[in-house]
Length: 180
Image (tube, rainbow, N blue to C red; front, side, top):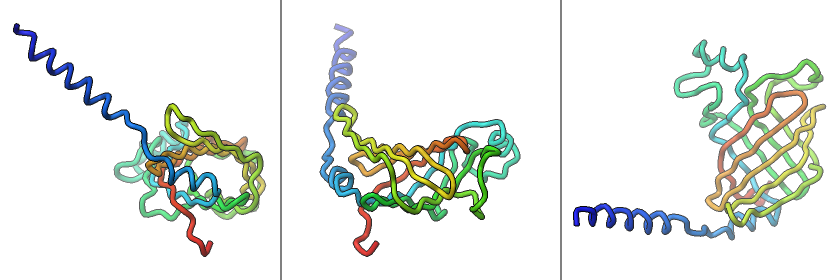
């Protein structure tokens, strides 16, 4: 008889955990992905951990609340726009560049402006998100781009290049205004 409260608690926990695995309404994100007309503003940059970034963290230059693997972008202008088969962006870059990077940019950010190649979308029904992959060019550098877009309009954008260490941006996706 002493075990009844424990069983009751286990049953309540079981039903609460089952109730939290509901399917989200994905109609808004489906519309944005289908129309290929959306913008992403990132709140966090997550550069690949390197010795150089660890040294920056130890120096205190990254600011309060930031670490070498998690940098706040709140208050920093950034965007990534998809409009049909075109992309435009400005994303601040934190990481290491390799010696084979060409000239032609006066800052360290990633600025896409032009057409995208190999655009593919896939809906993961089990985990409830869209994956979008494509290639885009920033100055003389090609990037492999992978986006995960969720029904709650959260986004994870990962950029990989042969010339820089990889970086992920976490933010929010919304409809691109009609005038853009």
